[in-house]
Image 1: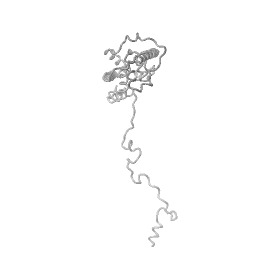
Image 2: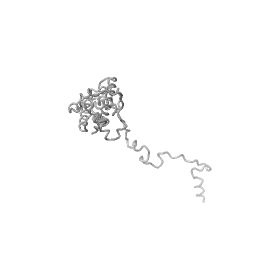
Image 3: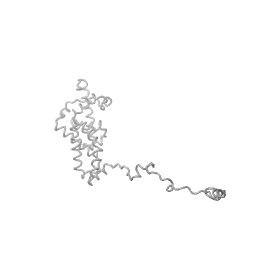
Image 4: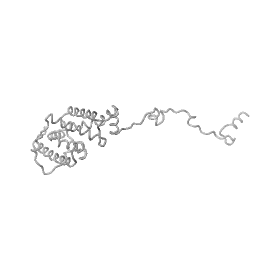
Length: 237
């Protein structure tokens, strides 16, 4: 009985008996929790580093320092866009792939001479466009003299973008673009299909902003004339 009384009187945490409650346990004294149960365990518990996206100029500097992975990253970042430009200027995917491969090969060879005052895309797209134009001329796919036979029209307008949902019309648009001389097709592709500004196009093709605007205006007129002629004549094949 006395032992029971001593046990009650000596019980910790009983203020009435002069025994204050012990302080709460610190995290180190509590039951150990696996790092896998914490919200940040997937990235920090095992020392993983956050993903850092390097800019184009950073990648170029890394390439100049011998980092081959940086060149692979730059290629993967812009290969699809470069192919899109080439494919909209050339008649087939094979020729477009050849142009893209050659363009990046030239980029790699001349990377040490890159001018950091310019955007990488301006340089790359200029190479792609020039190679595509060279390929067109070699394959004799265009009719340079046809521009002189196309009459003026009263007004000009944008491409019939609302009707491009059908494959038939998209194919016809491509066919008419194929008829344009390189300098006009280039500005049409870069502006109407790639969405670049006139100033960006000027940097790519190596001419002035007003010249690009004139070429674009002229190209739209030619395209509209050819479109109406083709539709009226039923020449959609």
